Amino acid sequence: MIEWVKEHLAGRLILHPRAERALSKAEYSEVGMVYRALLILANEYRDSRMASARTRLFGMCSPNMA
Image (cartoon, rainbow, N blue to C red; front, top):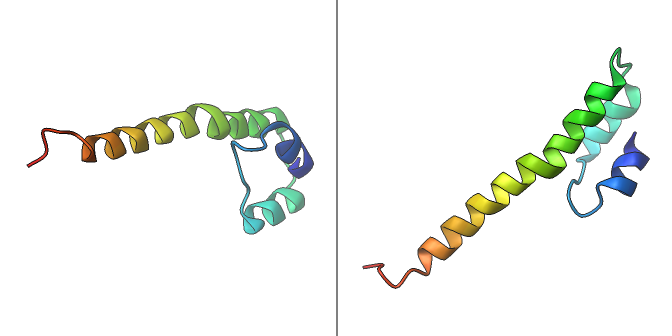
């Protein structure tokens, strides 16, 4: 699973070493659900966080700032 993340989600999701250890030791009854959760983190969640960061950044550069 760790190699799958590195191969398919490179540049979008980085696993913390502790998360890598947990993934390698865990036994999942629904592996597909884990992959879907990783995809959501790498796509929808990341995109929403990036949009939020852009909004804050551009908001600070607004000419209307006092």
